[in-house]
Image (cartoon, rainbow, N blue to C red; front, top):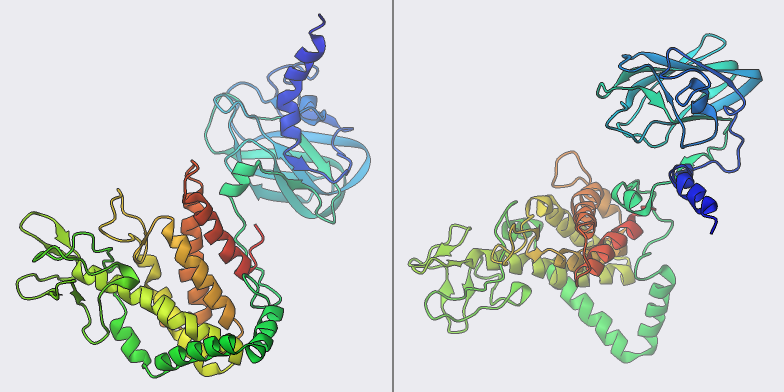
Length: 457
């Protein structure tokens, strides 16, 4: 059996893998035809580490400067005829125990002009772009290194004339996922995530045709009207402090063991801020069971989070009892009163969101993690609703008014400190590995924010 083809293929795998990490759009590599010299070399010009090895089109060979030669070291390409270039792709050695990565490089052209560039501390291909030059030679000088090692060298240097910018690095899927481009390009129309403008128009038509839908719209507006009657000052009085405790309320009443419900279902009332009422009527905290905000420690050592349960009820109520009818009513009526109140509440929640990063304090995880009362992947289950609310009021000028956060508009605060912060949390958690029932939630939360803000990654 002839094993030569298989052996050759195995030998070429590293070179092929490296070659696939840059897309050239079919452009000619103008460096391949050059004569190559260097400041020093670990072998003769025609040897294993000679200067021509850096421009032979083979990613499996390399030029190495003399052993222990310090920076600067240079490699010079001379072309038979002048060429026009504006892009260099530089690949350093993956043998990182022996080869140093260059930190700064200088490109020098035959007209005497130079370009200096800073590189990242990695060996794979890095693209250097500059103003178009016509030159008969190119000298690349490795000015400094991140860490001195046995050799300086270059696996491959490629030169292109690429005015359209088609030469691009191609990251492996995992690496691309870990290094997203978070530039928000915006969307042409809103709403754009779970509904489109044509859906809104159809909903208005259906509300005219079907009485049960008309009743639903009227009920939503009635609920929204109740929130218009509440002042902004009152909302801020009810809003938890940054870093406040949030809780499920697992331990229940220290008097009778009764429960008071969870999150938005807790037995709380706007008429008695900071308190919960258990199923047997005990109102807590009280004089015998004080809670400074971080919980009451019972005789058995368990912590009872009365205020934490209240805080959870507040944010859940603002999310679903206030924002849902306010935003939907604005979407259907374009009455700015509803957007004004919704924008204020979204801005208020965004102003404390990044610092409320432990989820429910009584959730059994170490470390505690989340946003507001929601632990871990449940962050995404609320984040998708924030996306919807913002999407529904996106066009309102109320979002461009000054934020509670100094120096920001409401829009910027909501996008950065609520949507962006929540999306990044979900995004990071999605990279932790393993398939579980929260992975889809994490991905969905990040995707929803990317969709509403126009983040293309």
